[in-house]
Amino acid sequence: ANKLKPIIAAPPEYLSINRKNLRPYDMANRLLVLAFSNDPVPITLDSQDRRWFAIRSNAARMTPEASLKIWRWFENGGVSACAAWLAQRDVSAFNPAATPPMTEFKTTLVEQGMSANESYLVDMIRERRGVFAQGVIASPFHAICDTLSLNAPGAYKVSQGALLHALMECQWVDCGRLSSRTHATKKQIYCASDMLDHTKSDLRAMAENTIVRAGTPMAAVSNLKIVKKPA
Image 1 (cartoon, one colour):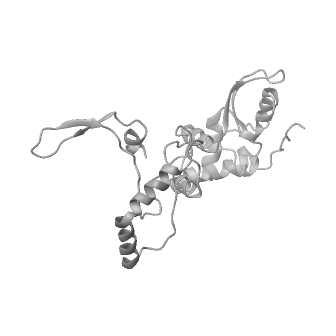
Image 2: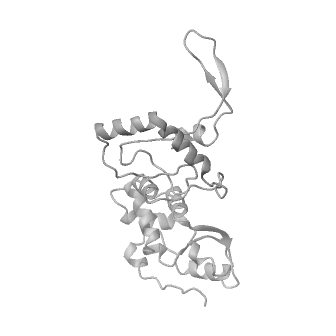
Image 3: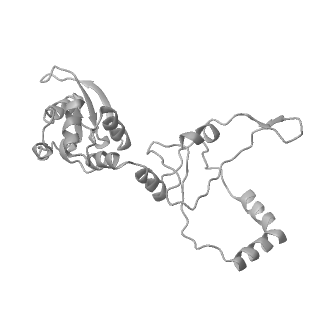
């Protein structure tokens, strides 16, 4: 996806046209990218993507007879009919600057693009298992990473970068370094988006209950007491 970014996200104002045996020239860029593929996972995206609107068709392959019929329709006024329909369509509510809608197929592209280890972290966070049970975690993150590494698939060692990326994928929020009257020491806090109605002091106290020493077996942190949302 990043290789295509210069074309679809920040396209040049002019394109250079260099025809063989003729003098090259520049023309205004009127490029609109439509990408098609028969591959079930043609591109990998992250959940923060704001460029691609992805849809999938389950239609069967068109027969030669059907193909010939539609091309004859195009040649006998079909193209003009399509143009007229588009010209009459009300698009006044369309916002070209809006993020493309998330579709089921785009969700598939996001999930299929993850490695086994990324899927492991994202599943843990989404299902609120282990150190993520309360919806809040706190630094030091290296201890959390060591604990997660003990249970990761294969011999994968969870890095802090991988952990923070997985939190972003799951829309967890960086609350900054928080302290409270009870806990004067500031700690970096991340919480699930549905925990934002808690006060910063509550989040700091909840995070204190999820402190994990490096190398702690996951079973030792899977039965943490859940702090309910305030009424």
